[in-house]
Amino acid sequence: MNLDYTAYLSLITDAYSRKIVGYCLSEDLTARGPAAALRMALRDNPERDGLIHHSDRGLQYYSSRYMKLIGKRIRVSMSEKSDPLENAIAERVNGILKQELLRTSFKSFSDAARQVGQAVNTYNHLRPHLSIDMLTPAEAHARTGELKKRWKKYYPAKTFHSQAAA
Image 1 (tube, rainbow, N blue to C red):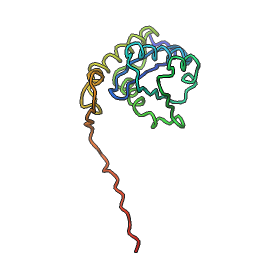
Image 2: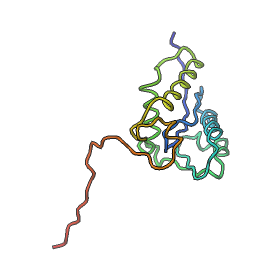
Image 3: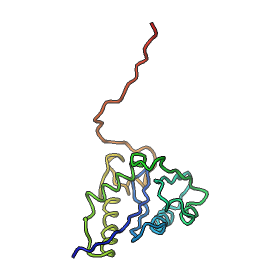
Image 4: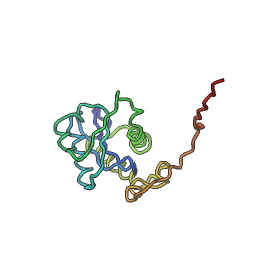
């Protein structure tokens, strides 16, 4: 049976490790879903020095409920024009979940929520990434220091030549 309903997935992803540290599937596009994902991320990752919270310009991220959770110790960064290219990590994580780890239809909202939990667990603990030295996000999250990026560069780096005046 395929039920017709809409669900919204809120994710908090650590940019260093690519680990999904907070998530919530909700039935509406209010601040409740993102706030629940942020509470999970803050609860499970108490070290907050130097954090920057980056998001698009969605109204839920401007809400007083959400901003109160962020508090004064976390800096806020928002994309300039809601351009997906300004939030490439989030777009990549969303693509992996949608294209590799989640089905396109679910029996119920609770089935979808269960499947999202399984997909996040698989993503965090079983799927290595070229961008984090072929580690899983959970392994990278436990490390410090630079993580080698192992993706292949398909385009040569641009070089700029100065022209001497004649």
